[in-house]
Image (tube, rainbow over all chains, first blue to last red; front, side, top):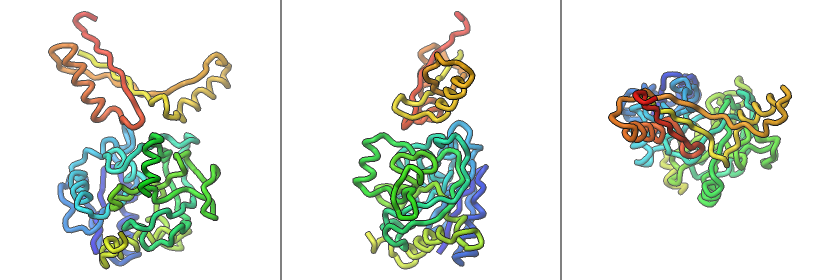
Length: 237
Length: 84
């Protein structure tokens, strides 16, 4: 299968995502510049981490107007799997493709550390290879990952089972201590109502090989390969 | 004409930066400062025929780009340089 890795001016995890897709998974991947209007014949799209457009104004605020986002939206509307990692998640929020917004971390610091997240939903193309409730050890690296949404929106996310990942301890229990940034309800990742667009703050592409300290992130990429090549996403729904 | 756009976090949204500034002011002895909310200020130099025109334009810019309605609200002031 083929991944499209979108490159904004200021993206800096694009190569990591490309490496995970090609070297680790043995799949094809192509970079797509943010001014391109086509995603080629990609089967899945990754919006990588970094600081698109310098994160000026707000994270993702300017990137959402990049020409490529029209193609990404069209791809998502057609049911194609889209993964936003960190800054890519922030772009999806600003673009309104996922609900809510990001605030500065509660600590007001840029935080770069391994965290534990629990897989709450396995019927998305990026989690279908996970065990229900599987706890993953994946690094975060962000200054604005404090997820916020109005209480009625959070209630709707819960009702629709759109919270895909939460920060937890090793036993999968949500605690204050396990929440690195102050996110409401310990939310680390979300999907849209259709479940094909997923965003998360932790970096699975940085945790695909044991040499990097954890290979727990690989399951997200294995999931989407299975979703695309075996039509497993449609079957899981 | 100049449009001043003040973008602030909604009252219901926690402001980690404002909280840090509040704490710093307290450390400096500003005990009378009860709370600080940090925001953004934009000054737009616009070609507009009237103050209403300028306000409309600034409002559109604030809705589309300068603010995020999920967490922020904004206020606009128009400065007409002919009279100012």
